[in-house]
Each structure stands twice: as structure tokens, then as C-alpha cells.
Length: 192
Image (cartoon, rainbow, N blue to C red; front, side):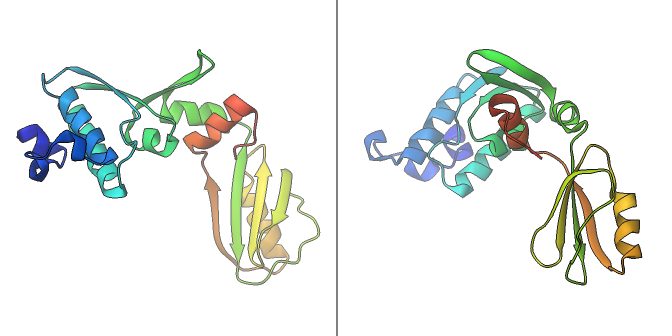
């Protein structure tokens, strides 16, 4: 009953499993994996079929297991889920490990030489060129400028915009997501 309560199935304890929804069956499988209080737990697509509330609850349980010192291997194609619960990550494609390490290490390797800077101005942008060390830039909407560069050119960009009479409201460097890293490594697609 304790495990059923942990996975949100206490109220369904007397129901037949055949009457369970896909999400309820997924929760039951998770509870079943915890029966022997394992030190190492392997989870394959554990959020499959869960509603948003169930996903959040499962994430919390995984975090609690980690706090108890348990090792949880989490395999999923839903990369934001992996990003939300994993300390160490490995990206595998066609049976080959392409990269592994902490999220910070992986993103640092990925971001070197790839910066995405977003600038928002008070005034509508009417720029014909950017002199900052940008690989590529584009105006996205009336007040938003997106810059791709090989170095962090925020300071140079701010000076250039201010010298052109623009009031900068916001500027930030966007870090890559795990999805960006995956797309670049596996498909050669542009992440950030």
C-alpha cells in the first residue's frame, strides 16, 4: 500500500489491472520496480502515458530516490524529461555513445564557439548591418534581434545598439538545451 500511495494508486488498490488506464499501468510498473527497495533502478520511458501531473509526481519520486543514495538509470526520448531529472547524461545513437558527462559538461562542450544572443529594444529595429563579431543575425519581430556568434559579443552589441539610438530593454545569452545538443550530435542540425 505504501508503494501504491507513492505512485498515486492508493485509491485504485482494489481495481483490476485490466481496468487501468495506460498512465495507471505505468505507475503500477514503477511501484513494482520499487518492491525490493533496489539500490540501482533502470527506468525505460517511465513517463510514457502519464498526464502532466503524473510526470511531475514521478520526477519528484526519482529525485527522492536519488537523495536516498539510489542510482537511477533513466532512458527516454523525451529530452526535457531527461534534462529535468538527470545528473549525468549519455547520448546514444545507432548503438554508439556520442557524448557523456554532466549536463554542464555536455553543454559547455557544445556551446564553445556557438552563442545565441537575444536583444529586445524599446524602439522598433531598423538595422541594416551589425558590426559585432556575428556569424549570423536576424530581426525577429519589431523589437527583437537574434544574433549567432562565435564569441560572447553582448557588450559590443549593446554599445553598437546604444550608439545607434536604441534603448535596450533585455539582452540574454541563451544556453543550449539537451534537445539542441542531441539534434546537433545526431542529425548535424543547428542547435543554438
